[in-house]
Image 1: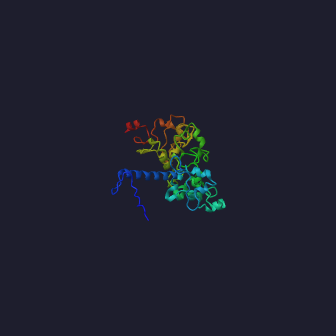
Image 2 (image 1 turned 60 degrees about the horizontal axis):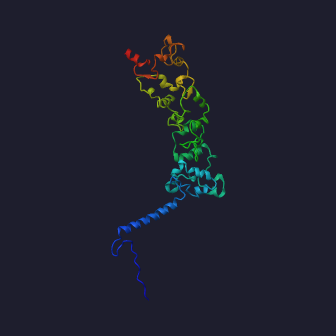
Image 3 (image 1 turned 90 degrees about the vertical axis):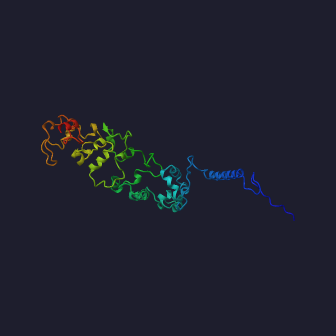
Length: 331
């Protein structure tokens, strides 16, 4: 029986007994590249315009985000834009997922019972904080902060899925978020002299560490005030040769309102002399070891003390804080 010899298919431009030509290799390479691109495009049909996968199901032990989206569609869609979604696909798809925070969801999917998962709306503040701190560690010294002692959990200020502020997953922007609880502070920012918080110049967190700081309740409050205030008011930071004891002992709030007040420069009294005479008494003060003040400033109606003692935060030339030119002339 006659059989045709096997057909040898050559590459275009190839010669029997010779290596494939450059042209043949190029065409083979282009063909393989087109196949790869087709496969990649097929995998990205459901991708977002920025290239990130849209609601790609990720799972630890059960159906993952695809199963959650059956009932919680809006939550899953919003989560794609959430900072938590960034590490969701890390570690083989077992990064930050629905189950990372809510626990295994298989029983919840099968039975539809909320009690089988971790529900932030039903747990205690301590349980909620422990869940967040499993990834975020223990920020600052939260348990010792005013928020920690007040039983305010992480979700008191932060939202998990859809943030209301552009950063930090805050429920809303500052200072309106802080004013939700600190209603007594809000009116102070409407007074004549105030820090420009509502104007957007500074935030509450520029001065306050909401998560607490190590040693917050062990160091004198004056020290913390000084560290906070001198970040902006650098001229008062020193160090000075002659320091004002009131600044070291009482802090900035001994003379100034921290948020806002009716007097210029946030002073606690309209008359500067009234503030000075709280410590500098007309007679010898054994408590502070301060000598009696001269008669010409023993009245609130007298010439302002700071008209002469202008370097009131500290001085390098005068121990009684006279303006620098006078201090130099006395030496």
